[in-house]
Length: 264
Ligand code: BTN
Image (cartoon, rainbow, N blue to C red; front, side):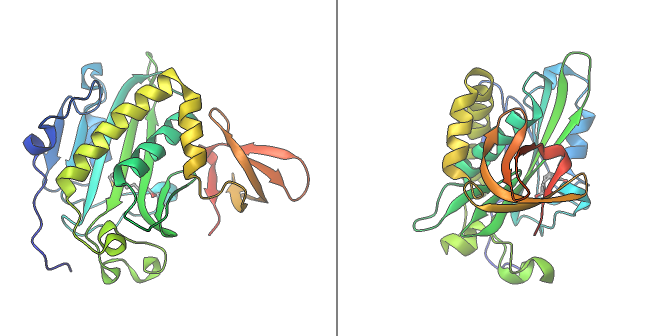
């Protein structure tokens, strides 16, 4: 458990001088909920709720990709979901834009390495500091997306379950200071607003930034696609079709995020 005093998330403080166009027009903070993605889903039928952001201090059933749980002790992290109604962006590009937005919001503590491990992990000094869970809900007017984001802020090594202690980290661990969650929440909302708009206007800008931040580019990657294993060199990203590998078995193939898991 952490022992420093932590400032609670306050929607009014997060909204102050936010100046975003789309994301964060409404911001709600829950004290405790099952999952912020579940709350966002309840608002999904009304397109006026586009851009709604839900934060929580605590989740009782936080979830990650591939059926994993998302662990975060009370007030130790940023747990949030963004609702996008009637969105025309394809899921691959949306996933890239969200990863770039979260990475930029976290920023790079001096002397550290900040990277995106496709599809949804943000890495600080080679360990996972944040994850993104993108859930889609088909609708008549375009896709409804719920972008769930978990950022580890105040955790110390022992706060993570034993099996994650070597592979997970927090902003406090890597920066050797205490993260300001309200400032981070504001940066996150602004960064998402910027990169989701950019994805709609100029997808090359998103992929260019993704290339700069990529953990896997020019490295060997082993992944499971629909349960089948593939290994190769990562040679790029396609904003519609996903990660591009030069396969060891020959040929070039693309893998979309929805059906792919990176092998450990
Ligand atoms: C992953 O890395 O597997 C994705 C983790 C996403 C966790 C966040 S926390 C807020 C939102 N609510 C959830 O239940 N999950 C996401």
